[in-house]
Length: 403
Image (tube, rainbow, N blue to C red; front, top):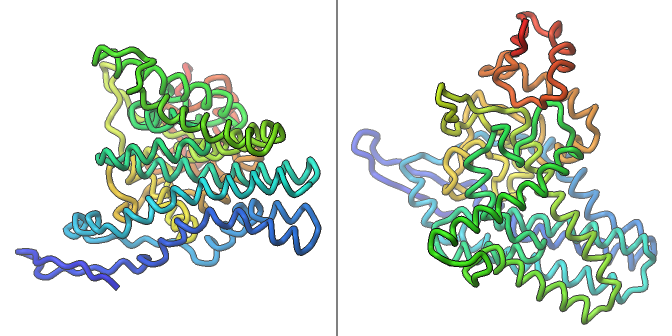
């Protein structure tokens, strides 16, 4: 196993071994789990077997998070440059890209050629969408880097879920306005995931397009220029999906519509849980404070982090967006999710359960302490939520409402 070392003038020799070095291979091969439903179906003859990869994601990974627990370890800061320069970690992300294309092609071909019923077709499209949604996570890791190659690769992988505006919107919009009411990708206390999706999906698309339009205008170019990064990715999506329709027939139209939506839903689910109710403070001039680690919900669960390139160490990511996944750190006293992302995605589907688990957790955070002035709360439900939780804590709740 690779050992990183440096001689520090005060601390002497510092060494570090990444105990998860080979386990990170799971991030690369995990998309292939999606095709496991095909041999199960061929063996059993039961179309419900095609849904096994989806269930294994929501339930299986959540069970592994419970079994393996959390990892609070961090690499020594002095060795982070060496860790980030190790090409092994970079190649794992790059080699994941063809996996996303392979999965879509295999599942689409089986859906068109195997003679499954409309129900089986639905299961295959949902499965393909779930794992293509992981392509957005791959693009997320690549799109934050300074390398022109990695940024190009992010646009290529975004062609699979047909979400070409993501990196533009995420980097220039979400990271600027995260944990504020102005951000369509930050959920508000009292807002369920279904209402959030209706705000987040179109809002992010509009903001991404506007950001790219402004960038091109600054260089004197039209929004329809070939330099438009969003159009570059969407052109690849069009080639990919039109080719599938031409090769496999019109049955691909409903298949791809379901696939695309469910892939987008994975990003919506992640955005919903990552900043729920968290709010950055404003100064007298209306400027928001710099994003801090406590403006994101964090999770250090081993299994799901290995499958998501450490996405769940989201607090450090927002504080230091260009850090590579292997260097992201855990911090004490952060907003902590009770389980990994897959379990939280499932919980979010049932708003009453979500509120029961997360609202009190939000109000109890040390930097909030029941102060509604420090919460990004849905305005239409503010009075209702204040009334609900006013008697739930030992100290009075600061409602933020006029007396």
